[in-house]
Length: 131
Image 1 (cartoon, rainbow, N blue to C red):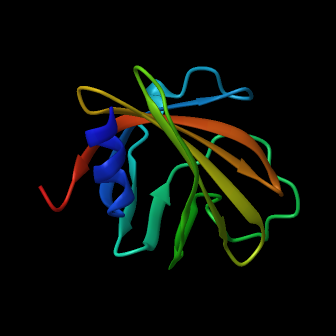
Image 2: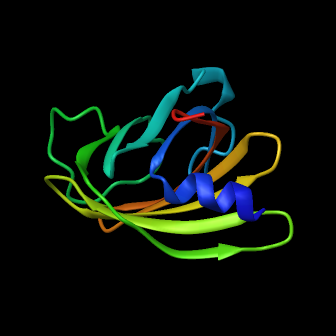
């Protein structure tokens, strides 16, 4: 797990999202949700679907989560079968915190908590760009 943590610390990974779970929409599979989260040279980029209740989000927005900004990994914990860490971000309308869990075999889980939306969980596969 220390090797996995070291790769994450290099800030050069991408998660391809293939499943989304929301408390408002327990089964989003029929929508074929796809998206990504990428951290490259400490720049966080996201293009994620969002299914759930939102507060104070402007009209005309498709309510997806799109971010491109500098970011830092914080609160990394290396456990026996997972590496967890957090990244805080902000888009035009809200503060967002991502909690990442990386598992051996290339699987990842990401919980997104926004100040203007209910939390949502993304599942996908990670890869490292610098491998």
